[in-house]
Amino acid sequence: MNAVNPAFAGSHDHRSCISHALGAAERLCASQGLRLTAIRRRVLELIWRSHRPSGAYELLGQLSAEGHKPSPPTVYRALDFLVAHGLVHKVSSRNAYVGCMHAGQDHVAQIFICDGCSLAFEQADGALDRRIRRNARDLHFHIREQTVEIAGLCPDCAETGRDD
Amino acid sequence: MNAVNPAFAGSHDHRSCISHALGAAERLCASQGLRLTAIRRRVLELIWRSHRPSGAYELLGQLSAEGHKPSPPTVYRALDFLVAHGLVHKVSSRNAYVGCMHAGQDHVAQIFICDGCSLAFEQADGALDRRIRRNARDLHFHIREQTVEIAGLCPDCAETGRDD
DNA sequence: AAGTTAATGTTATACAATTACAATGCGCCG
DNA sequence: CGGCGCATTGTAATTGTATAACATTAACTT
Image (cartoon, rainbow over all chains, first blue to last red; front, side, top):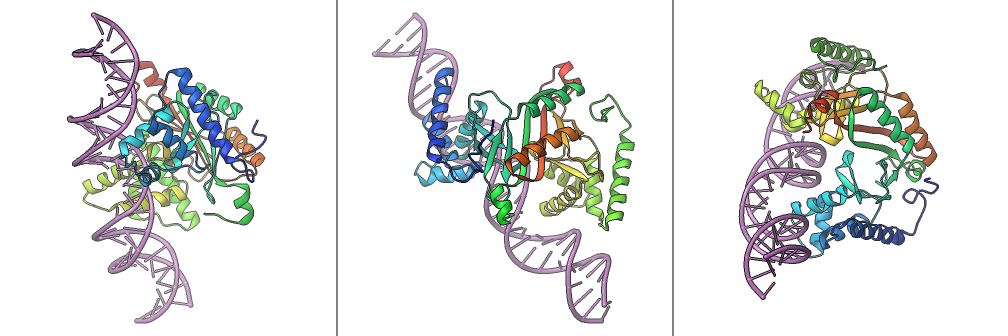
């Protein structure tokens, strides 16, 4: 797993990232009877423009630039939908949103975010998840959600000395 | 480690929590040549009033109530100081701050936060930390900071069915 | 005492998120 | 077809969170 790292690895065919993500979203919505409406789809596409987490108002700005001019609740509702159905992850430490690389796969994600270039990479280490669940069990704590975010420097930025 | 859970365990002598935290802060500042100024100390005390993460504007309100009337940057600067020196942890998933239970002990914390009563409990599982560090190393990622937050229900709230 | 740096004060603003309510679209059933 | 019910979107206002930029004060150094 995680043999190659699409986000941190040198270059990758990002077009296929996008189409893969959109395809997965469509399949997931179809299979679960969910509606991937125009805004939801558009927000998902915008988020997938890159592997950098997007802020809600950044997305709002991009939608406005297209003439669409939605207001905050519209964007937040789309984001809520996408997050709720596992198509997008919220990056709490940045108040931003990034496309999920394992949509529809039932996983717990850990997200690495580079302080230099802002690229994010998602990992799904089951052993890590289990360790956290075990710790919770020992505390008699019932987990609803895990937030695991690791900030630092990606290989590129570490090498070139970029640090913010 | 973590034999007893001061936050989730039934009652505990919170007065000693506070004095322990303040004492640790004073010792740490003394030993590192840092200045635990009046606001910084006051903010730390306010944070330690409970084991529930406090929002910056909540602290601001409490300071105002005491006649102190600081403005946001003042509080954020105090918080930045406390976080930077490991006296307080930021709980990103809640935009709030909670006292660190292992100040000066060089650890990586995982924070459990109850959706029911908002109590937070800090754990420092070294094995978990090492696992994350190992994953990072495999990705050639240089960690600056880990954010590990687990939301759910504490033993009490799980039992009484409180869920928000 | 003057110079230097850290800390705080002040004003304004940027960014993030939600509340409350209105309007619209869409499926379904009679 | 027409109308009911529900999900979705639109709109306006507000609340909450955080920072920028610059002025002032306090403390430490020589």
